[in-house]
Amino acid sequence: MKAIELLNQDLSDWQIEIAYMLERKHTLSGMFPAIYSDSEEIVVCLDKGLMLDLAQLLKPWPLKLDKFSVLVNKKLGICFELELLSQRLKSTDDQGEDNELIILTLEKFNELKGKKEAFRWAPGLLGHRLTPEAYAREITYLR
Image (cartoon, rainbow, N blue to C red; front, top):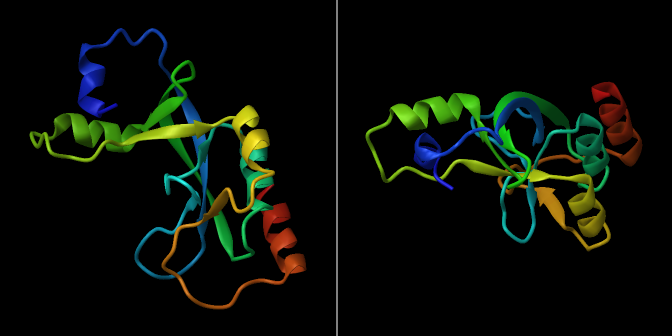
């Protein structure tokens, strides 16, 4: 769904909530989030604990947990980041990217977690990885 389509919809099934995503921590320009391996879509979740459970399935890297406001439709299983939604709706460029995000639910997580590398980090950063112990400390710190 494109953001512009929201202008012509009944928004009674939509609400504002807080969403979470994981990113590799680094000092470079750019974003290297956790993604679904098959679609390469960014993994977004409304449940902080579930997102941290997902972190345990990823290769150990320094990480951070991002928190942001979204307009969410749980029936459709999608959301729009509010800041980007506002920018997109002000734009006169109809060629812009779709900016809907698919919400990771507990059911979807349980379905995917048994598959080999269902989730991974977006490619782009090279460098040292953390030991499993250091990675566990990073996740514990975020709780």
